[in-house]
Amino acid sequence: MKYIAILGVSLLFVFFLMGCSTNETPLKEFKPAGAGFSVLMPGTPQLQTQTMNTAIGPVDIKMYVLEKDNLGYTVGYTSYPEAAVSEKTPDQMLDGARDGAVANVFGTLTSEEILSINGNPAREFTITVKGGGIRARIILVKNKLYMVLVAASKDNIMKKQVGDFLESFKLVE
Image 1 (cartoon, one colour):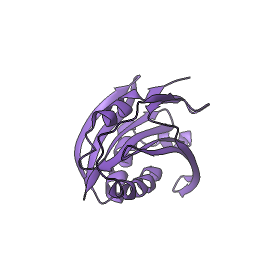
Image 2 (image 1 turned 90 degrees about the vertical axis):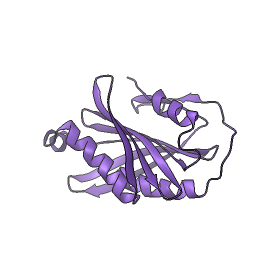
Image 3 (image 1 turned 60 degrees about the vertical axis):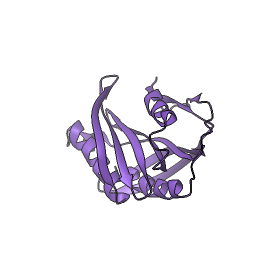
Image 4 (image 1 turned 120 degrees about the vertical axis):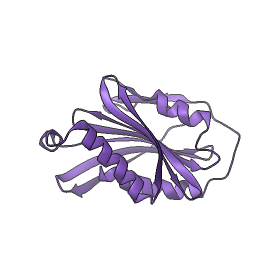
């Protein structure tokens, strides 16, 4: 859950650097080998991997990041030890990830929807911060937490392309 916080802070700076643009690049499938998902993106993202020390021990985080058309796209995941996940309900895991993201960008949760994606518990939410926001989906699949988000200026956060990106996330074998 801490990776959402770090990512949120990083993306907070991305949208401050973005202006308004009406150009949108067509979305193409991105399906990294072994990641368990596919998503439509307007280009090829760069992989960022890090290990975070958490209360449950070291956790590896993989994030694919792309800035395009004045939007900061990120899709990522982390696998938690099964014992750590079994100590909390799926709602507690998702709520904790959401709350951490909001707190770490000093934002305000402005909308949230409880979802089920392929039978897995999920959330879609919007965080408003000064000058912009973050729209995100988080999905818990057993002990793996996926995150799909876009950081953008206030004028761009509700663009159709943002919704298309979030909705395009698919779990794959």
